[in-house]
Image 1: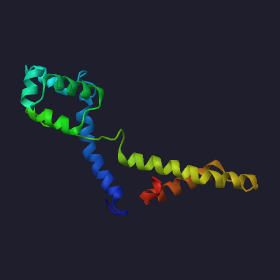
Image 2 (image 1 turned 90 degrees about the horizontal axis):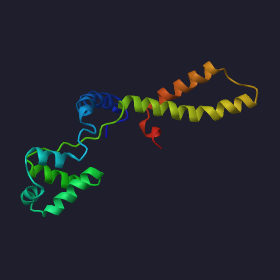
Image 3 (image 1 turned 90 degrees about the vertical axis):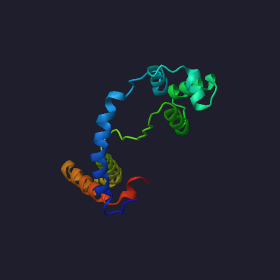
Image 4 (image 1 turned 135 degrees about the horizontal axis):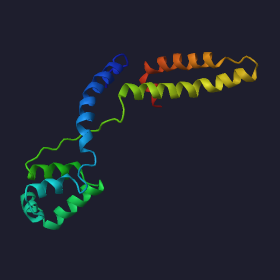
Length: 155
């Protein structure tokens, strides 16, 4: 795990790499309704029985494997094994929906609002209220501080 000091740099560097993955993955999202194993098998002209022989499985096990992929219950080990039998490469990625830096910033702002709100409300009750501008500045200031303390963001 990156140190506290360079985790934001690590997030930025990973964001650059993830942009490429995110863009490359876009055309493939939901592109194959029946699953990739079935699509590749059929495109290669392999029957389920033939793939089963290559995987040393019964035809029904291949059908179940394809169904598991379609339902999202397949294991990585099974995907890897099927990929090998199809002379393919398994590429596995967890791709965040947005940039990591944006996630960090959004979480810091959310947490800052949660921490500042009770204090602002208490001050308001004591007739020491602060303006919306001052409140916004305090939230922004605290959010910046929280971004520098990653462990506090996810408690």
